[in-house]
Image (cartoon, rainbow, N blue to C red; front, side, top):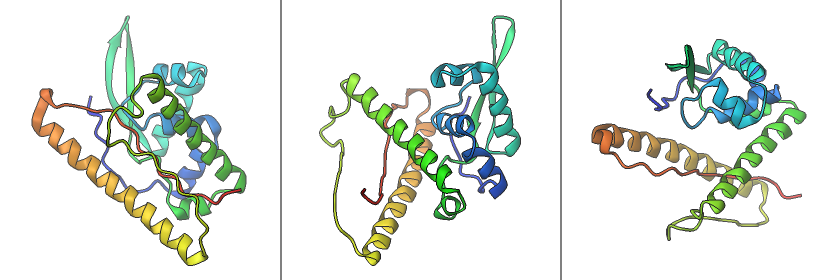
Length: 194
């Protein structure tokens, strides 16, 4: 199976609303981000009934945001693996179109994933293992122009990270089976303090 994610055109607004406004569907969309995964594996990871997860995986497939990445025979059955066609990253315009309740639910989902990522890394002893690891917190007071400038910096950083990932995938593809892989997670946050 190929875990490479190529950016595809954005899903129609109606599709996006059908994803982010349903709690389980949104969680599945974020969970599928890393590698091709089966509904059974998703159900185990999300601690949800496999039938519910399988149903919402089919909905996401029908909405055109995931696709079948491959199959594998398992105990007389066929296990299906899915991958993203559209990154689980929302544009400013997409977030503006969401209801306040859905914005909060989506942000909460992302923060829960971030906390879980950090906890897993701490537990594995990896969080600060590399000297060039990067944890950054910068409380600051901004005017409106400063807020817009910070937002542009974060958007540019996200774009650069996506492009760096593509270059990495290309290098690993050229290197073949002996390609070294380092599993990392990058988080970018910019929000108004309470």
